Image (cartoon, rainbow, N blue to C red):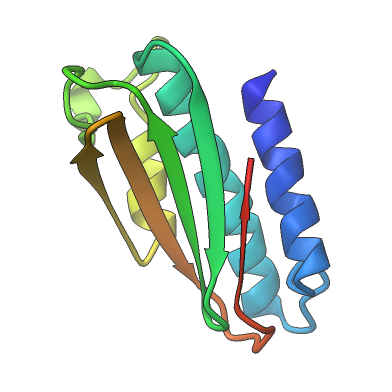
Amino acid sequence: MAVRTARRFAVETMRKLGLAAADNQADREGVEAAVLVTSELVTNACRHTPGAVSLRLIWDGSALTIEVDDNGGNACIPAIVPMTERGGHGGFGLCLVDQLADMWGTFSHRSGRTVFARVQLATGAAPACAAV
C-alpha cells in the first residue's frame, strides 16, 4: 500500500508542478523515470527497514530530487546487487535507480537514513518541495 501511495503522490505532485503534462518526449520520459525511481526507493525502504518511511520530492526548476527517509539505523547500506545474485527474490531496484537517475546516494542521520535520487528534466517549472 505504501508504494502505491508514494507513486500516486509523485504523479499528483508532478502534475501540480506542471511536469506530468510535459510537452516533449524527453520530459515525459523523465517524469516516468521519476515515478519509477520513487517506487523503487520506497519499495526498498519498506522491504529492508522496520518502521515508518517518509517521502520528499524537491523540484529545483530543472531536476526532481526524490528523498526517502527510513529508520534503518544499523541496516546495511543500499547497494546495487550483482547481476548473478538477482532473481525471483528481487535485487533489481537499485540497478534501475542507477540507470534512470542522474545521481543517487545515501546519508545517515540521527533518526535513520535518507536514500535520494535526482532525475533531470528540461522543463522550467518553478522550484517547490512536497512531502508525505
